[in-house]
Image 1 (cartoon, rainbow, N blue to C red):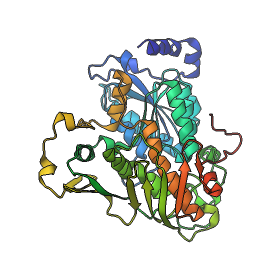
Image 2 (tube, rainbow, N blue to C red; image 1 turned 90 degrees about the vertical axis):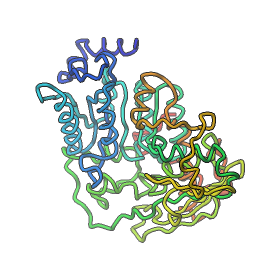
Image 3 (cartoon, helix red, strand yellow; image 1 turned 60 degrees about the horizontal axis):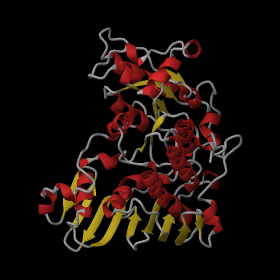
Image 4 (cartoon, rainbow, N blue to C red; image 1 turned 45 degrees about the vertical axis):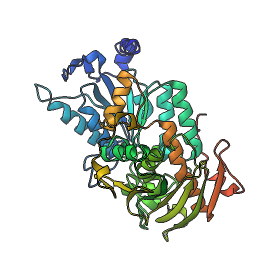
Length: 452
């Protein structure tokens, strides 16, 4: 706790008091839980997220934050977002949640910012949750790591292979704890499925199919009026991205549907590869390996204006690993993971695990064959526990970057019309395909630059 003691000394110094006059220290909150306030972790939220039916008050990042706020070891004290309405949502959700735990029924202690750098500059922030669009992940994670803040970053890791590499290097240099939001690694049915496969209960593996969603198509809309900078800072939202699509997309699309254009995301493929495909890779024990090639690549694109650079609405490819293992990925496969072995076939998706040999669904797996473990605390709690007590997070950035890069490679094949790409991960080069290689990285809009 020496670092925290030093940071708290800085936080109570006169300059800090002038800079942050409204901060309510965690020590004064009395949230209980048997953890001393001086040992509590202070969290900041970067990117509140969209308001969609399944998260009516903020997006995935705020949903993750809610789970951590329930843990007595932490306190969420700040949020940053370029949209004033989302900042207000975060402030209300956080302060209302903590007010219910106070004897007075009142709490005011969540500061909000437009610029995430101001949040990172606070010496009393120990860790951050990053829930911004994909094109911002790299800069924000690297800046957080350089500021010594632990990071929980939503998946996918980043928009390009070169960004993934820079982020891994930043985490390794800083020594921070970094968890990527592949939360299925913390779910019971998936962890058991991994143990069944890696324990050898299916016999020799014959085929692996991963079904991911298709669709996610933008609709062409009339030009939208420019936003009011006082309520929505579009230039800051755009950040390092090279295009200026507000006239096409409009504000209502930029909080969720940004992911359906290659300027900001990678479509359903990059959104979901860090879920079902990730579990398949773990089950096969391939998490330490880069994919060798993608082949049999096919994709359909929506009929939309070319300046949108829309992502594939339907796709198929095979990922080939150095040991010859092949994973087939398609939006036409059954949604989930199907692994066929010589002894049995396993299917797993959210809240469902089926094995063709019913005895394997109930079998008590001996401890020495539980390669992936069975403990299922939430993904966020695992992150907090690793900060407080050490140990390896369930979704290390180096592993998840390799998985994310499969989506980047496949998307490069789709966009260049190639049915196969063989690449050199070390040099980030697709052999004989300079056009595809260029899509594995991207130039930042000035004055932004990717720290290397």
